[in-house]
Image (cartoon, rainbow, N blue to C red; front, side):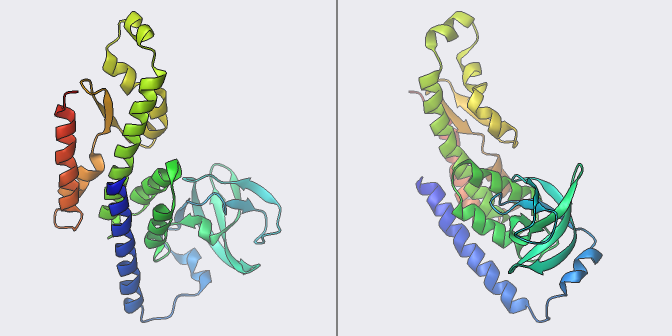
Length: 251
């Protein structure tokens, strides 16, 4: 918990710094909203289901087509202001289209969306926080905030691994496991609660001596390999060293 808190505080500092630098660089007035249609890439992704109602018309009072889930990929066609908010006209494959509130989505087409999503990740909790962090990493591979999100992601997953270890120990029946003849580690690594994380490309490893699952450390390794000079690199290496010790531990 202390590590994830450190990562969150550090991320908040980087977001503040990023926003300040962006404001200092802004010398020209923003383009008109109708310039969206001329952008070379208008791909976006849903990050806030609370606002992600796809509507027939650009209005908060318009009939809804569907409510889109986090991670839903869409394409921007245009924009319009109504009812005090901005709406984007979008296509939502395979066969839906309509209008959605601007704050429900993020994408490279809009400057500053990486910082906005990072703030949303920071203020989230539970699986939704992990889900939004994954969306950030997929959508903004070149963001200056990527190392901080990677560090936070790793800390969250190691905390999750400990929680799932305790849950599995309570729910897995020792007599049934012994009767099956399958090795102990296979039950933990096939534990049903890991499925939702695997669907997001998140993997775990298992120490058979301590009977504890651990995050495999992929996000920390990415920091040390791709961002060795970043402020997060030293912290990531500490976590990898700690992971090595945990895997060698004997109960």
